[in-house]
Image 1 (cartoon, rainbow, N blue to C red):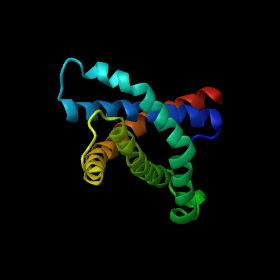
Image 2 (image 1 turned 60 degrees about the vertical axis):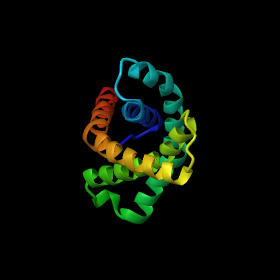
Image 3 (image 1 turned 120 degrees about the vertical axis):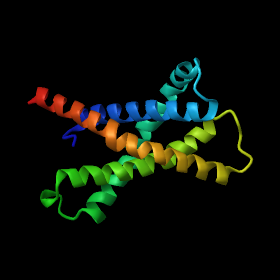
Image 4 (image 1 turned 135 degrees about the horizontal axis):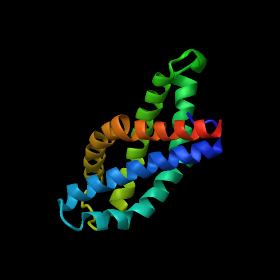
Length: 155
């Protein structure tokens, strides 16, 4: 877990950066198929997606998730396994970020859906299926490793 604002920015940057990259790639391939122009489309949408994800993480989803976790789900953090705390936060962060970023993706898409409710529900469902394992198996461990290395350098 980040211990100060510098570590929080580093960790959020790694986490959001990798998740936005992975999910942007997934959504473009899902929509347009895999072709030679996939990476140019990913890179075109990446900066704005990353900015929105970082702002949501730092200003809305992150504080909300931490409040829920430490006020309702984990009453005694000092006597709770760090793995349990990390996994609980990770799962809830994915739920919150997928909820927000799926809406962002629909708003940014060139095709305006005729039925927003159905389009959003389908987008959210498909994104959660990819985002949860991406976060838990790849991005989370890489980001925590990077944070651990940063913390070791600062000690």
